[in-house]
Image: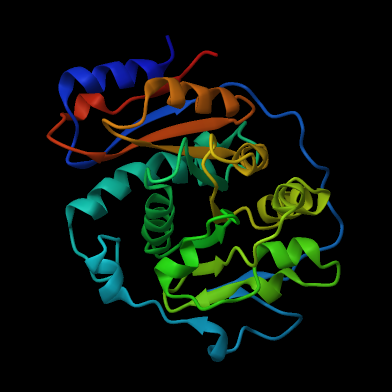
Length: 301
């Protein structure tokens, strides 16, 4: 029995932590289908965003996030102090950051690339992806690039108040577009955002293209001190999530407590077999659960 199965069974007996409880499990299967390093460089990543050629991103390109609105929606914001949400996301991000930058990163390929997904829509993956990005960027020595890769139902831009802008799809489709053209700096130091871009009938093919593989490789190897978080489509609702999972070193699987069927969770886990690390977050939980519920270990397939 896998650690996720044990956690699900234990959750039924013990109840659930208020708002969010976490169960962390580490996969041992390595992804062997990795793109080779590329010689052409994408623009240098500095400060709040990317440099385009030799010029910094101008102030007119900075996205002004409405922190008051985000706070009302329950998100982590820079002005929050010791709230329950902050503490919860500190617990969630700790293993991710350790795997990306600490001793745990040894043996994890592309450890600084993190995919946030779920089994089905509505489980809170975008809420988790944005909160993780905000929580990590809130650390003084960390930079985060948040990429909306849920190209069929993008939510990151809408949530953050970003107006229609070229994004990931345009970059993958256009042979002459620089990556800097789709990166938006924000009014939070250390946080940049890439919108999903326009809807495209061949979005799956674009996300599974060699250009996307090369981009993931470049983001990982050229900028190893930056965390890149992808908000992905649900694994059982679209094929893009499974495609993207092969490009990252860590995956966060968001599970809606007391709602998502265990069979769905295990089907999603099977699709994540090539991933180095799989972490699970129980979202929308009710009641209280003691700290003994938090687990971090290996699971077998």
